Length: 378
Ligand code: AMP
Figure (cartoon, rainbow, N blue to C red):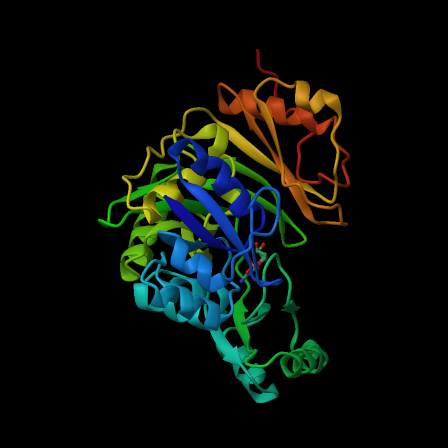
Protein backbone atom coordinates (compact mmCIF):
# COMPACT_ATOMS: atom_id res chain seq x y z
CA UNK A 1 0.00 0.00 0.00
CA UNK A 2 1.35 3.45 -0.88
CA UNK A 3 0.08 6.66 0.70
CA UNK A 4 0.67 10.20 -0.55
CA UNK A 5 0.74 12.84 2.19
CA UNK A 6 0.13 16.48 1.35
CA UNK A 7 2.87 18.24 3.31
CA UNK A 8 6.41 16.99 3.91
CA UNK A 9 7.24 18.10 7.44
CA UNK A 10 7.78 16.19 10.66
CA UNK A 11 4.23 14.81 10.75
CA UNK A 12 4.68 13.13 7.35
CA UNK A 13 8.07 11.90 8.54
CA UNK A 14 6.59 10.30 11.66
CA UNK A 15 3.75 8.75 9.65
CA UNK A 16 6.34 7.22 7.32
CA UNK A 17 8.16 5.75 10.32
CA UNK A 18 4.92 4.38 11.78
CA UNK A 19 3.75 2.98 8.45
CA UNK A 20 6.88 0.94 7.68
CA UNK A 21 6.07 -2.06 9.95
CA UNK A 22 2.64 -2.30 8.32
CA UNK A 23 4.14 -2.28 4.82
CA UNK A 24 2.57 1.12 4.26
CA UNK A 25 4.94 3.15 2.12
CA UNK A 26 4.63 6.92 2.48
CA UNK A 27 5.59 9.56 -0.08
CA UNK A 28 5.07 13.26 0.55
CA UNK A 29 4.12 16.30 -1.51
CA UNK A 30 5.91 19.53 -0.62
CA UNK A 31 3.29 22.16 -1.35
CA UNK A 32 5.83 25.01 -1.33
CA UNK A 33 8.18 23.54 -3.94
CA UNK A 34 5.52 21.52 -5.83
CA UNK A 35 7.76 18.44 -5.58
CA UNK A 36 7.06 14.87 -4.50
CA UNK A 37 9.67 13.94 -1.90
CA UNK A 38 10.79 11.15 0.39
CA UNK A 39 9.40 12.07 3.83
CA UNK A 40 12.64 11.15 5.67
CA UNK A 41 15.40 12.26 3.32
CA UNK A 42 13.44 14.96 1.45
CA UNK A 43 15.03 13.55 -1.75
CA UNK A 44 12.97 14.37 -4.85
CA UNK A 45 11.06 11.72 -6.73
CA UNK A 46 10.77 12.09 -10.48
CA UNK A 47 7.00 12.40 -10.18
CA UNK A 48 4.55 15.23 -10.74
CA UNK A 49 1.68 15.65 -8.30
CA UNK A 50 -0.58 14.12 -10.99
CA UNK A 51 1.73 11.08 -11.33
CA UNK A 52 1.75 10.61 -7.56
CA UNK A 53 -2.04 10.87 -7.33
CA UNK A 54 -2.39 8.21 -10.04
CA UNK A 55 0.23 5.93 -8.46
CA UNK A 56 -0.85 5.74 -4.81
CA UNK A 57 -3.84 3.99 -3.27
CA UNK A 58 -4.57 6.60 -0.59
CA UNK A 59 -4.01 10.35 -0.20
CA UNK A 60 -4.09 12.27 3.07
CA UNK A 61 -2.67 15.45 4.62
CA UNK A 62 -0.36 16.50 7.44
CA UNK A 63 -1.45 20.13 7.50
CA UNK A 64 -4.50 22.23 6.73
CA UNK A 65 -3.07 25.18 4.79
CA UNK A 66 -3.28 23.44 1.45
CA UNK A 67 -4.16 25.41 -1.68
CA UNK A 68 -7.74 24.58 -2.64
CA UNK A 69 -6.77 23.59 -6.21
CA UNK A 70 -4.38 20.93 -4.87
CA UNK A 71 -6.96 19.72 -2.38
CA UNK A 72 -9.70 19.56 -5.02
CA UNK A 73 -7.44 17.67 -7.44
CA UNK A 74 -6.68 15.08 -4.77
CA UNK A 75 -10.32 14.82 -3.67
CA UNK A 76 -11.43 14.28 -7.29
CA UNK A 77 -9.33 11.09 -7.39
CA UNK A 78 -11.64 9.55 -4.78
CA UNK A 79 -8.55 8.52 -2.78
CA UNK A 80 -8.41 11.43 -0.35
CA UNK A 81 -9.22 11.12 3.37
CA UNK A 82 -10.37 12.83 5.55
CA UNK A 83 -13.26 14.86 4.16
CA UNK A 84 -11.73 17.95 2.44
CA UNK A 85 -14.33 20.05 4.29
CA UNK A 86 -12.47 19.22 7.48
CA UNK A 87 -9.15 20.35 5.98
CA UNK A 88 -10.73 23.59 4.78
CA UNK A 89 -12.29 24.23 8.20
CA UNK A 90 -8.93 23.58 9.87
CA UNK A 91 -7.34 26.28 7.70
CA UNK A 92 -10.05 28.95 7.95
CA UNK A 93 -11.43 30.06 11.31
CA UNK A 94 -14.69 31.24 9.68
CA UNK A 95 -15.42 27.73 8.38
CA UNK A 96 -14.18 26.22 11.62
CA UNK A 97 -16.54 28.28 13.77
CA UNK A 98 -19.48 27.45 11.47
CA UNK A 99 -18.56 23.76 11.68
CA UNK A 100 -18.43 23.83 15.48
CA UNK A 101 -21.82 25.56 15.64
CA UNK A 102 -23.32 23.03 13.20
CA UNK A 103 -21.95 20.12 15.25
CA UNK A 104 -23.50 21.74 18.34
CA UNK A 105 -20.30 21.84 20.41
CA UNK A 106 -19.54 24.63 22.88
CA UNK A 107 -16.98 27.18 21.69
CA UNK A 108 -16.01 30.75 22.58
CA UNK A 109 -18.51 33.46 21.63
CA UNK A 110 -17.37 35.18 18.41
CA UNK A 111 -18.11 37.60 15.63
CA UNK A 112 -16.54 38.23 12.24
CA UNK A 113 -14.84 41.61 11.88
CA UNK A 114 -14.29 43.21 8.45
CA UNK A 115 -14.56 46.90 9.34
CA UNK A 116 -14.01 49.32 12.20
CA UNK A 117 -17.80 49.32 12.67
CA UNK A 118 -17.81 45.52 13.02
CA UNK A 119 -15.13 45.85 15.67
CA UNK A 120 -17.38 48.22 17.62
CA UNK A 121 -20.25 45.73 17.36
CA UNK A 122 -17.94 42.92 18.46
CA UNK A 123 -16.96 44.92 21.54
CA UNK A 124 -20.66 45.03 22.46
CA UNK A 125 -21.55 41.47 21.45
CA UNK A 126 -18.42 39.51 22.38
CA UNK A 127 -17.27 41.81 25.20
CA UNK A 128 -13.87 42.83 26.49
CA UNK A 129 -11.22 41.58 26.80
CA UNK A 130 -11.28 39.82 23.45
CA UNK A 131 -8.88 37.92 21.23
CA UNK A 132 -8.81 38.87 17.53
CA UNK A 133 -7.59 36.12 15.24
CA UNK A 134 -6.85 36.10 11.52
CA UNK A 135 -9.18 33.67 9.71
CA UNK A 136 -6.46 32.38 7.37
CA UNK A 137 -2.93 31.32 8.06
CA UNK A 138 -3.06 31.63 11.83
CA UNK A 139 -1.28 29.00 13.86
CA UNK A 140 0.90 28.83 16.96
CA UNK A 141 -0.59 32.14 18.10
CA UNK A 142 0.44 34.01 14.92
CA UNK A 143 -1.92 36.65 13.49
CA UNK A 144 -3.52 37.38 16.86
CA UNK A 145 -4.27 40.52 18.80
CA UNK A 146 -5.57 41.08 22.32
CA UNK A 147 -8.02 43.93 22.84
CA UNK A 148 -8.35 44.78 26.50
CA UNK A 149 -9.96 48.23 26.55
CA UNK A 150 -12.15 50.17 24.10
CA UNK A 151 -9.43 52.88 23.99
CA UNK A 152 -7.07 50.46 22.22
CA UNK A 153 -9.61 49.73 19.46
CA UNK A 154 -8.46 52.42 16.98
CA UNK A 155 -4.81 51.45 17.16
CA UNK A 156 -5.53 47.72 16.88
CA UNK A 157 -7.94 48.32 14.01
CA UNK A 158 -5.21 50.22 12.08
CA UNK A 159 -2.89 47.25 12.49
CA UNK A 160 -5.57 44.74 11.51
CA UNK A 161 -6.71 46.79 8.50
CA UNK A 162 -3.15 46.66 7.13
CA UNK A 163 -3.10 42.92 7.73
CA UNK A 164 -6.48 42.46 5.99
CA UNK A 165 -5.32 44.30 2.89
CA UNK A 166 -2.13 42.28 2.66
CA UNK A 167 -3.85 38.88 2.19
CA UNK A 168 -6.71 38.23 -0.23
CA UNK A 169 -9.83 36.68 1.31
CA UNK A 170 -8.46 37.36 4.80
CA UNK A 171 -10.85 38.11 7.69
CA UNK A 172 -10.73 38.57 11.43
CA UNK A 173 -12.63 36.53 13.98
CA UNK A 174 -13.24 38.38 17.26
CA UNK A 175 -13.51 35.91 20.11
CA UNK A 176 -14.32 36.35 23.78
CA UNK A 177 -11.27 36.00 26.02
CA UNK A 178 -11.75 32.72 27.88
CA UNK A 179 -10.36 32.74 31.44
CA UNK A 180 -9.39 29.08 31.24
CA UNK A 181 -7.90 27.02 34.07
CA UNK A 182 -5.92 24.90 31.64
CA UNK A 183 -5.71 23.92 27.98
CA UNK A 184 -6.35 20.31 27.02
CA UNK A 185 -6.63 18.47 23.75
CA UNK A 186 -8.15 15.23 22.64
CA UNK A 187 -6.64 13.17 19.86
CA UNK A 188 -8.83 10.48 18.39
CA UNK A 189 -9.44 8.50 15.26
CA UNK A 190 -12.50 7.49 13.27
CA UNK A 191 -12.33 4.63 10.80
CA UNK A 192 -14.17 4.09 7.51
CA UNK A 193 -16.94 2.22 9.32
CA UNK A 194 -17.52 5.09 11.72
CA UNK A 195 -15.86 3.48 14.77
CA UNK A 196 -14.30 6.07 17.06
CA UNK A 197 -11.32 5.56 19.39
CA UNK A 198 -9.85 8.39 21.48
CA UNK A 199 -6.71 8.73 23.56
CA UNK A 200 -6.71 10.04 27.12
CA UNK A 201 -6.92 13.84 27.16
CA UNK A 202 -3.64 15.73 27.09
CA UNK A 203 -2.86 18.78 29.21
CA UNK A 204 -0.92 21.36 27.20
CA UNK A 205 1.29 24.24 28.25
CA UNK A 206 1.83 26.93 25.59
CA UNK A 207 4.43 29.68 25.87
CA UNK A 208 3.92 32.67 23.56
CA UNK A 209 1.26 30.68 21.72
CA UNK A 210 3.59 27.74 21.00
CA UNK A 211 3.17 24.30 22.55
CA UNK A 212 5.96 23.50 25.01
CA UNK A 213 4.78 20.60 27.13
CA UNK A 214 2.00 18.00 26.75
CA UNK A 215 1.10 15.47 29.42
CA UNK A 216 -1.38 12.62 29.04
CA UNK A 217 -3.89 12.92 31.84
CA UNK A 218 -5.67 9.96 33.39
CA UNK A 219 -8.46 9.76 35.89
CA UNK A 220 -10.45 12.80 34.82
CA UNK A 221 -13.51 10.86 33.69
CA UNK A 222 -16.04 13.71 33.47
CA UNK A 223 -13.74 15.85 31.30
CA UNK A 224 -12.67 12.84 29.24
CA UNK A 225 -16.32 11.97 28.54
CA UNK A 226 -17.17 15.57 27.54
CA UNK A 227 -14.19 15.67 25.20
CA UNK A 228 -15.09 12.30 23.70
CA UNK A 229 -18.70 13.35 23.09
CA UNK A 230 -17.56 16.55 21.36
CA UNK A 231 -15.05 14.58 19.33
CA UNK A 232 -17.77 12.17 18.15
CA UNK A 233 -20.15 15.05 17.33
CA UNK A 234 -17.54 16.79 15.16
CA UNK A 235 -16.10 13.65 13.54
CA UNK A 236 -19.53 12.16 12.79
CA UNK A 237 -20.84 15.44 11.37
CA UNK A 238 -17.98 15.35 8.85
CA UNK A 239 -18.07 11.59 8.24
CA UNK A 240 -14.43 12.03 9.18
CA UNK A 241 -11.85 9.31 8.50
CA UNK A 242 -8.42 9.58 10.13
CA UNK A 243 -6.93 11.19 13.23
CA UNK A 244 -8.51 14.44 14.36
CA UNK A 245 -7.22 16.67 17.15
CA UNK A 246 -9.41 19.02 19.15
CA UNK A 247 -7.98 21.73 21.41
CA UNK A 248 -10.12 22.85 24.34
CA UNK A 249 -10.19 25.45 27.06
CA UNK A 250 -11.11 23.91 30.40
CA UNK A 251 -13.07 26.38 32.51
CA UNK A 252 -13.91 24.83 35.89
CA UNK A 253 -14.39 21.40 34.33
CA UNK A 254 -16.45 22.65 31.37
CA UNK A 255 -14.83 22.36 27.96
CA UNK A 256 -15.05 24.92 25.16
CA UNK A 257 -13.51 24.00 21.80
CA UNK A 258 -10.68 26.37 20.85
CA UNK A 259 -9.78 24.84 17.53
CA UNK A 260 -9.60 21.64 15.55
CA UNK A 261 -6.72 20.17 13.58
CA UNK A 262 -7.81 17.67 10.91
CA UNK A 263 -4.63 15.62 11.23
CA UNK A 264 -2.14 14.14 13.65
CA UNK A 265 -1.16 16.78 16.18
CA UNK A 266 1.84 17.96 18.19
CA UNK A 267 -0.04 17.34 21.45
CA UNK A 268 -0.42 13.68 20.43
CA UNK A 269 3.29 12.92 19.98
CA UNK A 270 3.38 11.36 23.47
CA UNK A 271 1.36 8.43 22.04
CA UNK A 272 4.57 7.13 20.42
CA UNK A 273 5.76 5.92 23.84
CA UNK A 274 2.64 6.19 25.99
CA UNK A 275 -0.13 4.47 24.05
CA UNK A 276 -0.72 1.00 22.63
CA UNK A 277 -0.88 2.40 19.09
CA UNK A 278 0.53 5.83 18.29
CA UNK A 279 -1.49 8.55 16.55
CA UNK A 280 0.62 8.24 13.36
CA UNK A 281 -0.12 4.54 12.96
CA UNK A 282 -3.80 5.07 13.75
CA UNK A 283 -4.12 7.78 11.13
CA UNK A 284 -2.62 5.47 8.51
CA UNK A 285 -4.78 2.57 9.67
CA UNK A 286 -7.91 4.72 9.35
CA UNK A 287 -7.19 6.19 5.92
CA UNK A 288 -6.01 2.81 4.57
CA UNK A 289 -9.25 1.12 5.67
CA UNK A 290 -7.65 -0.99 8.42
CA UNK A 291 -9.19 -1.43 11.89
CA UNK A 292 -8.02 1.14 14.45
CA UNK A 293 -5.38 0.08 16.96
CA UNK A 294 -5.96 0.38 20.71
CA UNK A 295 -5.64 3.92 22.04
CA UNK A 296 -5.11 2.77 25.61
CA UNK A 297 -2.49 4.48 27.76
CA UNK A 298 0.26 2.04 28.66
CA UNK A 299 2.17 4.34 31.01
CA UNK A 300 2.03 8.00 32.10
CA UNK A 301 3.86 9.97 29.41
CA UNK A 302 4.70 13.59 28.61
CA UNK A 303 6.17 15.29 25.57
CA UNK A 304 8.60 18.20 25.59
CA UNK A 305 8.95 20.21 22.40
CA UNK A 306 12.51 21.06 21.33
CA UNK A 307 12.30 24.59 19.96
CA UNK A 308 15.26 26.21 18.20
CA UNK A 309 17.84 23.74 19.61
CA UNK A 310 19.73 21.09 17.65
CA UNK A 311 21.52 19.23 20.40
CA UNK A 312 20.81 17.90 23.87
CA UNK A 313 23.04 16.95 26.80
CA UNK A 314 23.98 13.25 26.96
CA UNK A 315 22.28 13.17 30.36
CA UNK A 316 18.93 13.59 28.61
CA UNK A 317 19.53 10.60 26.35
CA UNK A 318 20.71 8.63 29.37
CA UNK A 319 17.45 9.06 31.29
CA UNK A 320 15.35 5.92 31.65
CA UNK A 321 12.24 5.95 29.46
CA UNK A 322 13.31 9.10 27.65
CA UNK A 323 13.02 9.04 23.85
CA UNK A 324 14.37 11.77 21.62
CA UNK A 325 12.78 12.35 18.21
CA UNK A 326 14.61 14.74 15.88
CA UNK A 327 12.95 15.99 12.70
CA UNK A 328 16.11 16.40 10.59
CA UNK A 329 15.55 20.14 10.16
CA UNK A 330 17.99 22.98 9.94
CA UNK A 331 18.15 25.00 13.12
CA UNK A 332 16.27 28.29 13.29
CA UNK A 333 15.30 30.32 16.34
CA UNK A 334 12.06 29.01 17.83
CA UNK A 335 11.62 26.32 15.12
CA UNK A 336 10.15 22.96 16.11
CA UNK A 337 13.28 20.81 15.79
CA UNK A 338 12.17 17.68 17.60
CA UNK A 339 10.57 16.44 20.78
CA UNK A 340 11.34 14.33 23.81
CA UNK A 341 8.88 11.75 25.12
CA UNK A 342 9.26 10.86 28.77
CA UNK A 343 7.44 7.95 30.41
CA UNK A 344 7.27 6.74 33.99
CA UNK A 345 5.45 4.17 36.08
CA UNK A 346 3.17 6.71 37.77
CA UNK A 347 2.13 10.34 37.42
CA UNK A 348 4.31 11.23 40.42
CA UNK A 349 7.35 9.50 38.93
CA UNK A 350 6.69 11.30 35.65
CA UNK A 351 6.74 14.65 37.44
CA UNK A 352 10.05 13.62 39.01
CA UNK A 353 11.51 12.48 35.66
CA UNK A 354 10.49 15.78 34.03
CA UNK A 355 12.14 17.76 36.82
CA UNK A 356 15.37 15.74 36.44
CA UNK A 357 15.41 16.26 32.66
CA UNK A 358 14.49 19.91 33.17
CA UNK A 359 17.72 20.47 35.09
CA UNK A 360 19.71 19.36 32.03
CA UNK A 361 17.83 21.67 29.68
CA UNK A 362 18.23 25.40 29.31
CA UNK A 363 15.46 27.22 31.19
CA UNK A 364 15.03 29.78 28.42
CA UNK A 365 14.66 27.20 25.66
CA UNK A 366 12.42 24.92 27.76
CA UNK A 367 10.42 27.34 29.91
CA UNK A 368 7.46 25.06 30.69
CA UNK A 369 9.50 22.28 32.30
CA UNK A 370 9.47 21.81 36.05
CA UNK A 371 12.91 21.95 37.63
CA UNK A 372 11.91 21.41 41.21
CA UNK A 373 9.93 18.43 42.32
CA UNK A 374 6.62 19.27 43.96
CA UNK A 375 7.16 16.31 46.27
CA UNK A 376 9.64 13.46 46.57
CA UNK A 377 8.77 9.98 45.33
CA UNK A 378 10.61 6.70 45.90
P1 AMP B 1 -4.78 29.49 18.84
O1 AMP B 1 -3.83 29.76 17.70
O2 AMP B 1 -6.18 29.90 18.54
O3 AMP B 1 -4.69 28.08 19.37
O4 AMP B 1 -4.27 30.42 20.04
C1 AMP B 1 -2.99 30.27 20.62
C2 AMP B 1 -3.09 30.39 22.12
O5 AMP B 1 -3.66 31.67 22.49
C3 AMP B 1 -4.03 29.35 22.74
O6 AMP B 1 -3.37 28.14 22.94
C4 AMP B 1 -4.41 30.05 24.04
O7 AMP B 1 -3.38 29.94 25.00
C5 AMP B 1 -4.52 31.51 23.62
N1 AMP B 1 -5.91 31.84 23.23
C6 AMP B 1 -6.46 31.69 22.00
N2 AMP B 1 -7.76 32.04 22.00
C7 AMP B 1 -8.06 32.43 23.24
C8 AMP B 1 -9.25 32.90 23.88
N3 AMP B 1 -10.40 33.07 23.19
N4 AMP B 1 -9.19 33.19 25.20
C9 AMP B 1 -8.03 33.04 25.89
N5 AMP B 1 -6.87 32.63 25.35
C10 AMP B 1 -6.87 32.30 24.05
